[in-house]
Length: 335
Image 1: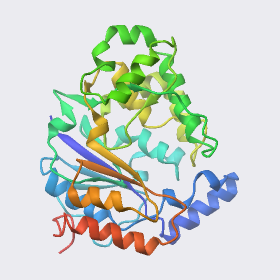
Image 2: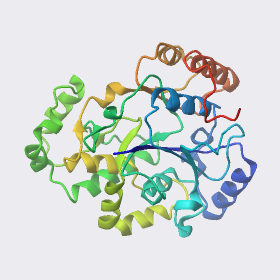
Image 3: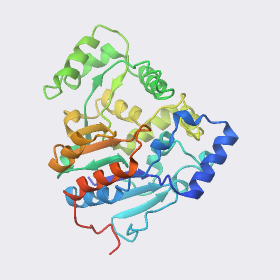
């Protein structure tokens, strides 16, 4: 079966987008502290995402580039494997405009032409070396890791802990923890899992209820039918979430879909933790650049931070690291 890629991108420097966002923030009295510019900052690395997709995953069926409406000047929008998807092309008009990544992600199944199997990338996730279709799907089932981990009361984040708990609460309405562990023990105790998460799952057997889930923040292998099933069962709730123009503590997010696939037994266990290395940007990013230059994992996630002050220095450092492994323009760039 074909496998598509979906990537969502926003140009946080676009004046029209900034003005619309500011107007709705004022109108809805949205607290921007939970939704700072680090969530929208563009590090000018998007070219390397497309170069990586072409060089390391030439088998991809199609790429859907999801955007508010702005486009990079260098992007070859006539590429036969590329479709530009504006929010208004697939998100119902009643939910627009939206500045909430959860709304953008929870409605992907509405993208016209999207294949049943697809891999979702945030724009901070990059391929670093060749990948095969079997790294994401086996016989139509997503590859992933079922790991239990308590939701942490992180007071430094006013939104995400609630979203993770909301995910767990919805899942608990359909799956009994102990029954699920008995039904698919190999999903919880796969020999290839990292020892730490194997131990977490073992310790979680003490508790009769779900305490939370650990999901690797990396490319997500998803099924369109998972979306359709959840929207059929929880359409009212997902509709309400889709009305939140900004991230809200009442939201659920795309990890709900991944956990649904796992608890349903509709996945293939693997060590997903080893396939993507996660880094928080800082002033010193030596380990990150070493990982990129050495292609030490299949993919990397580069999480932004509000604490960075030397943005131009960091931007140059990242570009140089990616240029060392992806120096040549690809067919997704205008000649």
